[in-house]
Length: 111
Length: 117
Image (cartoon, rainbow over all chains, first blue to last red; front, side):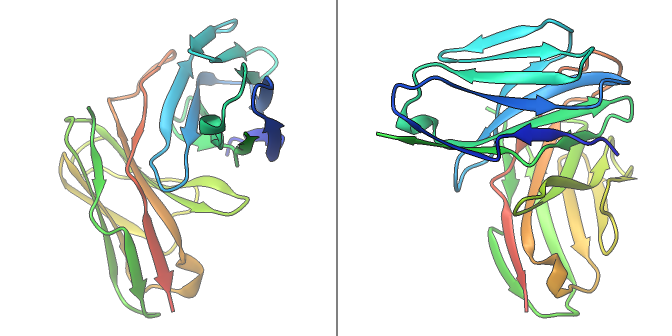
């Protein structure tokens, strides 16, 4: 079973602050790394799927990087807004094709 | 837009009852998944399916079974519900994932909250 870990567990920031979270995963047999954003009472929504070492992806104020050799990914949010408040999940896939999730980072952005 | 629909959002069942959680997707996806979400534990994979009538165990299959008679529908079955199965259940689907660089996004339903009393 993959062990995917996310830190911190929760984070409170002020509106306008930039922030980042970490996802660590086993680097052996790596196939893909997914980031999801999960707002309360809604479905998790895909942010990024990354597969190659050194990948960097961006969507508006949110970006992510991937290091498959050392087994980590960072998610960055620039200029956080209250609507960014959500739980951010990462998930890793290896050669078994199972997508294994971390327990998430809960972000609260105060106005 | 991809739509994954979980027909039952909130259920309360008694211990020992048989429970069916239904999931339907409308994008002709090959893969379908059932996860459960518990506080502090993240999403844990119960079962998944790559094709009709095909199923594979995830990490926590005990106490559950699944059925995939049609491509668009994946049902999670609790043969005899127990209180430790009180949880939030998420269904998901994706295009077929095979090989390295399988970058297909997974789409989730809105969840089914099950309470077993």
